[in-house]
Image 1 (cartoon, rainbow, N blue to C red):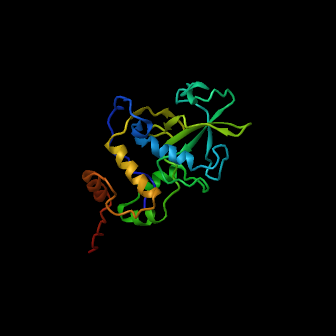
Image 2: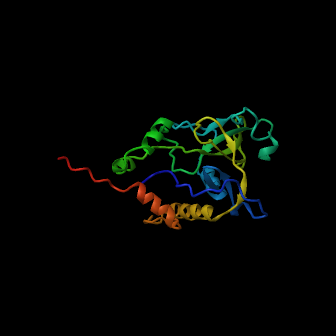
Image 3: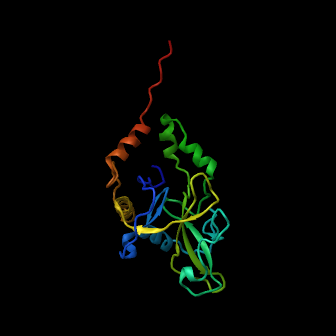
Length: 219
């Protein structure tokens, strides 16, 4: 099974914000959405955001976009009032195992471009792909105090080093679909095919990509 959460179709810009609670909000990016609940659940599952593991994560976040401008204001952005707090990034939106070595971008691209007849072999040994989304969490190294999640950032398409800030928007249909499947995974419910709440056109396009091609008979 592919480790990456399939990103639903996206609008060209985030929808207007509302007064909904955080549990009814999602982070918008051009590469897909991340519901707040999924990001916060992932952060809570990490024993220590300051303890780097074999995967290279959690990693210290330098708080710079592709133009080397600050993404978040410190320390106001993480609402801790701790001037000595630094930020750490944690992969979200995938089943990334931080205790295993992360797959590099070249391997991820190679796995995405395999022939459709080889998809089963690739899916049988999924890569430990951290994906493009990161939760940002502030913490103080000296006191070992961790603060609530600041927000979510992402790698723009085609870049594995640049960062951009994901704005909040009301939870949409795509975000609810991801939340429902996340609840199934947390509750260890049986995952069936097709996945719960998956759109019909998304299923059709996925099946078209994975159709087994019959080899031509040589004369």
